[in-house]
Length: 217
Ligand code: BG6
Ligand code: MG
Image (cartoon, rainbow, N blue to C red; front, side):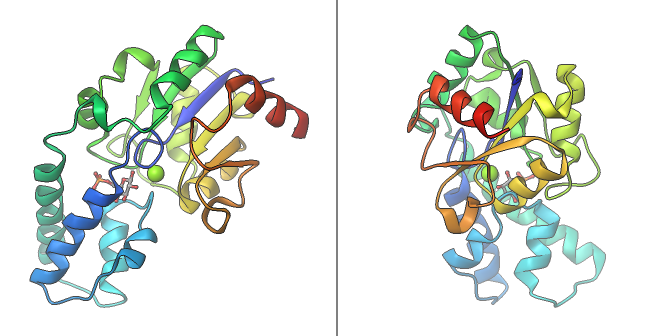
């Protein structure tokens, strides 16, 4: 039985990955570090500190400098997302949340981002979810299962009745580690380990999605 859906935010409900890319790129250019769009793809779903570690490719920084770089990237990111409105929702996102509510299924957002609450407010999504879990609420980020387990706990549901919707490899790993079913959004090379792969949220209706997932379980 499926009783709840837990959504990742960046890349699932809204597309902030371009803004993350531009913010990391600005920092990388200032510091003379090569950084491409392809490098950015590997940062999907990965926390701010882990992203910086990957950007540094094995090089280490004194802790204070590491913090300053992470904060600087976040300042650039916040400048870029200041203008977010409900227009920045991905196609089908709001309709999917509404269909779930109509079907009596619970809804949560679980994001590695420490800016998630602010983004969700700007998108006007708070009225459509029961629970919001963000990067400030758990120690370990994705691919650890903590964000999803916290969401299930706050929803009052067991992991095995929850379905995660993710666009990142790290997120799919996290959902599996939590013992949840998972829908992957995007190309198979990235999300192929999900139980069901669809290109975007408006690609299949809720009934069809539930049939696929319940049939395979
Ligand atoms: C995830 C993004 O949702 O949040 C990552 O996919 C990002 O790219 C991570 O690094 C952390 O975000 P923030 O806003 O806390 O820096
Ligand atoms: Mg994501």
